[in-house]
Image: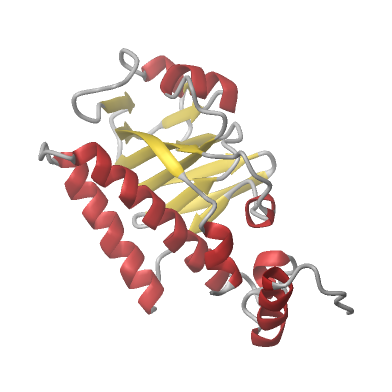
Length: 234
């Protein structure tokens, strides 16, 4: 088994909460910190992963000093649920997204949050996922606070787009077993996003995840991971 698969076996995503967003330019929103979001959406979660799937339109997202432009098809993942801001244009004010939440979940269907002016509409699927964080996982600690993944025409990108379309249809369905299906889908999407993220890292990128692209280093990591008791040398 490769090292990424082995580490991902310990990752469990559950308790997913989704909503849709129809934001019309100009608009600007901030998110509260992870603890406040957890209290509002997943009160029992020890840790959350947040993602946004941009279905239509464009906008920007910012975490700290890292600001990136987003376009239809892009996926944003915040592995540590850091406070962030999103927007488009020059809104007269910036609100906190939690003020738009309806009554606390569970919801019978994903609510639609409408907000903004009268300009171009940006449609987003937002997901908040509970992560089982009971064990140290070097893969998770190596992730950046903001991941923007743009599905390309590679086999990984095509599969990711198909999964996102499946997620969209499942969110619109009221078929039995929907909650269980969404839970499985979110785990699959998380793995696919990680694979696409690794594939799109710059050539000169350093770090644990970037090393997985090098066949020799990846093989060495797999051996160390499989036989940690051996006296390996570098």
